[in-house]
Length: 88
Image (cartoon, rainbow, N blue to C red; front, top):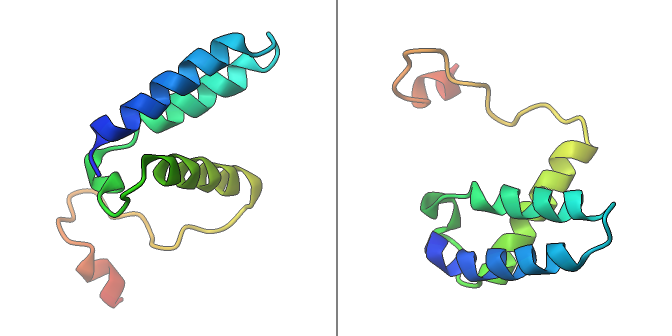
């Protein structure tokens, strides 16, 4: 799936956000902004844009809700391959 396929959903959700109550609009904008940041590489394994949108919204929710350590440590500056890090 390409990012352009997600754009239709983002536009519909932006229109829906305008119709929300004033105190809910900030949340609608947060969701659409979240989806606009996704790249083609992140969407490559999805076929359905609604599934992709739901997945990334839920992923953000889990990241904000649970205080879990990152699965893979951050790559040190200048390191080209993560394989060196994973071997240790």
